[in-house]
Amino acid sequence: MIKTAIIVDDEEAGLENMERLLGLCDEIEVVAKTKIPEEAVNLITDKKPDIIFLDVEMPRMSGFEVLEITRNQGLNPIVIFTTGYNQYAIKAIKAQAFDYLLKPIVLDELKETLSRLSNNSIIGHRLNSSIASLLSPREIEILELVIQGKTSKEIAEELFISKTTVDTHRRNLLEKTGCRSTSELLMRVMG
Image: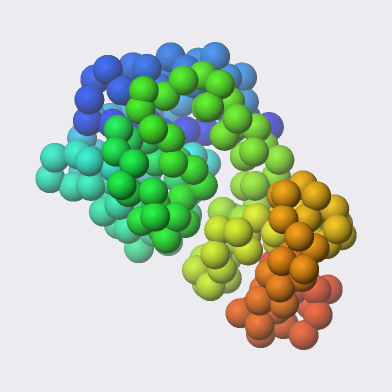
């Protein structure tokens, strides 16, 4: 399934490189691009893309501010931060970004991110925002695999973590959402 994307980068070279790389990826259709963060907010609101490739440091407004305004409008697109600075990684995780790519972005890294995205990760980013806001990115990742019908053992193998860690995350999912069972959680998420 083709996903729509908007690229936001205040540097022309970054904008062009990302557009060129995404042009090599059949599953992505770039519907808009801009160097101006304020314009990005309007484009995201208007076009409602599946994905935003969002630079962090821009004049007048950071990528985090663009994301906050967007979410305050009730939109919850998948966000992949693109930046030349690695010091924002923790903040990006806390902002529930899907990924954090360091510039210069290379095709292999982008394709790996898109591959993870196509493995049904869009579910977590389309969750009811009240549920998504309760969960960590790892819990959302585990929830997506539970939705796919995978067992704790299969999830552990796929994510290279222990089955005990998966079970702990599953318990946390139930506690945070107030559900008594996995089936209740799935009905709430899927309904």
